[in-house]
Length: 263
Image (cartoon, rainbow, N blue to C red):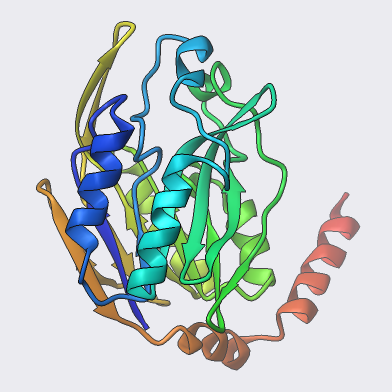
């Protein structure tokens, strides 16, 4: 399976430019799965929820998903696209999955920072999606810092963990490598580049996107410039490795019994 990420400088509050830049860059490239950064259409910083509403879209009926559906159909590929979603009165930090047959599903960010809580509502599902026989899960940036969602995805058979992100420090890189090691799946992290200044907040995005194998080894990475990276992996390795090492259900039941006895 050919998987990759596109790391680039997202233009704040300019969805049309960002979507066109992605499609122009990816057009004609051969890949099965591509991960884009968190909130790649809009940027991350907003003065208020009222401002964010203007850049939030319906999923799957909004213009970005419609454009990517046509793109994925023409290019026979899947894309994980981070964008602000509007659903009635609620706003979500969402990653949508689009494939050759159209919209496949979405993950709404569950783990929110204090800043994000002023803008977004919390998601409430943690699902694995089947794309051409490969099982993928999604954690959005900060969600990788906590092991619970990733473990839940692994229990559902996740083979590739996709991580749309917007970060400036190194914590997410450390966390996502740990998630790969402890759950024995591949991880694809797509971070953005550039700077944002809004409401007294100055955010710098470092790049450093990368793909880890099931042992936490870096297969490919980018530094601080625009980069499209695509490599071949074998997702079946994730399932095989876990089956070789343990009977997961048995081990988790034993751990739970011990924890209960210690109370």
